[in-house]
Image (cartoon, rainbow over all chains, first blue to last red; front, side):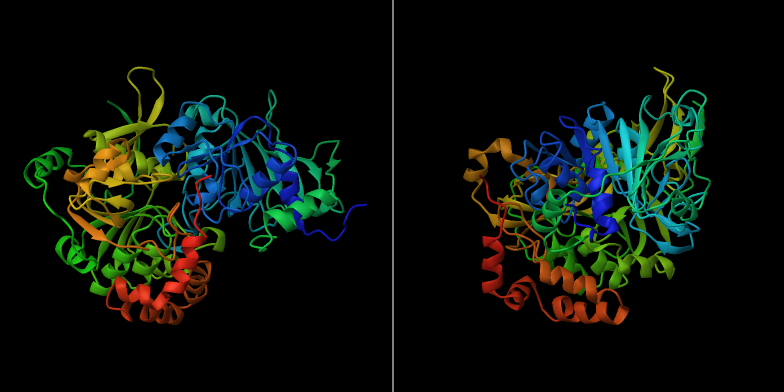
Length: 258
Length: 325
């Protein structure tokens, strides 16, 4: 029996958690990515090496970190170093994945966390890049985790903070970003997406699987740009009872996010 | 050499690396001098209106909150800030003291965006925001720490981050790769909170080091606040733990619970209710002012602040510390 009363956020976290690959290194951004990483380490990726940009590497995630620098990010960890050390580790090719959030995403997976509106006279000033740009530049594979609506899935981000595929095929390499680094997935409150990045592809976001109870049309209606729809669209598994129990009782009992 | 792209962001502080060497030669003593002083003395002696200033680590983690609150009490203004911050920079912005920002991230993490930042930037009170990533701002300090005018990096490329920074893109003459050149960042004043230091400023940190090592080497004046003042013999017993040697340091402030309401790894945990109080209060200018009146202007110094929080609460936070296992 599956509990049908889960929220969209809980489902998004579960779908994101299933993307973590056991035995790899992954930069974890603040917020939802932390919950997804914790869930992954308690389910399918017990040997995940979480990396937090302020210096923590290899922590045992027993308690949800509230900040990327606090002690929970190096709790029983194997390294408590500094920002330079871990960013340099990424720059020399040791960090496999990056899990990030953002306020806006465009068809190429570029993220905005700086300003809504004009940079110098913004309608809304957002926190800034933080480590986002570095993670999107340096990690081998990047996953974005986002609320899904037209305000967030936009044709063009107001400020391009974190590189996805930039303007399409070969744009990352042309800009000088490390060869082979790329965005691979977007997990939203409605769907799991990947990229049309095969030979001759457009390098734009493509629908891969809808969440249970969500129609393809619903995803299209909530996306502010033309989403590539393949012939086959899968449906994601709903959260299992165990996933929900872990999320509610062990990961976020204080309900910071869920 | 051809410059492929140049950021249009203001160079808030020029990377005068020769001037920095000269400063280090003439203005920083190598003698063992007792540098202990209060928050009041440290701020009035080394911080001035319009200076280029930065704090380490980060609002709720090993952050020099007692010194940051004193800066607000003394109303040092028109600050140009190297901004990676949470509560400390929120307080400065809420008090209207910040004019320009080299910004990486200012937010409340688990509690979302910073309303103090939003108000200060959207109203135009902060005149300039120059954008950097966490790695690039840290590497800018590392350049200064290395004594070189810039460092190449592979961040920021292809994005608006370059455009709104003061970085440049060139083709590397060795490999032909495009690289982002990050100018050395030289602070007039840096403030860093540590676990222990001796009276001369030899300082040791436990847990993650953030960009403490780099910032300590990328500033003209360095104010250290410390949970504990120890004998130099203690430092000499564990020299491998010294992150900041004394000659970098200008002031040593004894500040137990100096990071409150933030945490100090292995010493005390976060004071979630007081952090939440700021999150709620800072939603409006009036709320922010009331918070400042209570926790900053309403107390004369850090000792009074600790009395306001109360011994019982502080002992509880010490109990909730991260423990070595």
